[in-house]
Image: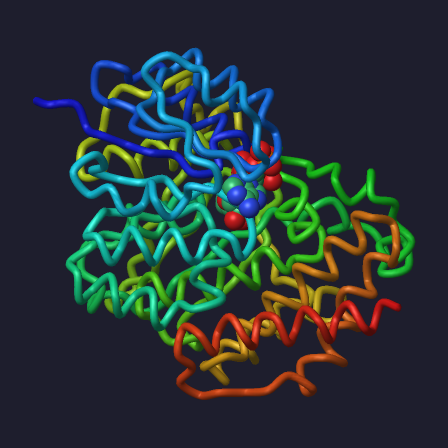
Length: 377
Ligand SMILES: NC(=O)c1ccc[n+]([C@@H]2O[C@H](COP(=O)([O-])OP(=O)(O)OC[C@H]3O[C@@H](n4cnc5c(N)ncnc54)[C@H](OP(=O)(O)O)[C@@H]3O)[C@@H](O)[C@H]2O)c1
C-alpha cells in the first residue's frame, strides 16, 4: 500500500503535537507533505527538522524556516497547502478558532479529504462547508472525540433516533455559580480530564465547548437539534452514543486520549495498531456516572440550541462573540461568567441572515467581534 500523504495545519498546537506522535508511530503508513503553525516558530522549526515535510508554513515570518534542507518555506501558506491536491490525500485541520474556515474550504474545493478538529469551521459556516463537501465528494472526518465516537457508532444514519453527546462537565461541575464567576484563569484552565489548548479549555469550563459540539454534530450528521442530547459523564470514558430507532443504544468507550480519534480520522476506514493505547479495563473503571446538565448554571447549552435552531448566521455570531469573550477572559479583562452576559446581550444586536454567502459570513463574524470588543471598553 502506498503511504497516505498528509498535511497538518496547526501542528504546533495540542491536537497537532499529538497528531505528530501518531504519525511518528505510523511512519510506514503516512508521509507528511506540510506542517503549518502560527507564532510558535521555535517548535515548528523543531518539528520540520525532525519530520522533513515538503512544505512548512508559519503565521510569523521566521527566516530559519527557509533554511531547512528539502523543505520549502511558505509564509502564511495555509491556503496554498490546502490547494495541493496531488500532494495531499488528507489534511488535518487542527488550528483553533476562525482561522480554520478558509483553508478548510480551499481543501474541499480541491477535492481533498479533511480530518476536522477545528469545530469553529462548522459552527461558523456548517451549511456552506457541508454542502460544498457533498458537491465535491469530500469526506469530513471528525477528530473531536465525541463526534468520532458517534461516527464509529453509526451504521446507517437513517436508523438513528438520536445522538447522545457526553460532557465531562469541566472544572466547575460541582462548584457554585459564584465560585465559577470568580474563577481565576488558572482555575478555568485546570480541566479534570483533558489537556487541550487554552481556548477550548475555557470553552469546556463554561460548557460552551459542548454547545459548539451540538452545532458541529448537527452539521456532520445532518441531525435536527431536537435529536441531539447532552449528558454529563465526569469520567470521560463513554465518548458519546447513539440511540437507534428500535431503541438499542450503541456507545463508544475508551481511555480519554486524543490519539485514538486523531488516528481513526486519518486512517479511516482502516484501523491500525494504536500508539500508547493501554488496554481498556472495565474492572479498573468500576463505575460510570451520568447526570443531566444544569442549563441554568451553564446557559451556553441553551445559547447553542437557540442559535442552531435559528440557523443561518446565528451560529456565526455566537462563535465570534464567544471567541472574543474567551480571549478577553484569558487576558484577565473580564470574569468568566461575563462570557455568558456578552453572548446574551449581544446576540440580539447582531445582523441575522438566513442564508448567508461565505463573504457575508466573514462580514457578520467581523461585526460580532467588533460589537464584543466595543462592549469590553
Ligand atoms: N485539544 C484537544 O484535545 C481538542 C479536542 C477536540 C477538538 N479540538 C479542536 O481542535 C482545534 C485546535 O485545538 P488545540 O487545543 O490543539 O488548540 P491550540 O493548542 O491552541 O493550537 C492551535 C494551533 O493553531 C495554530 N494557529 C493559530 N492561529 C493560526 C494562524 N493564524 N495561522 C496558522 N496557525 C495558527 C497555533 O499555532 P501557534 O501555536 O504556533 O501559534 C496552533 O498550532 C480547536 O478548534 C479545538 O476546538 C481540540
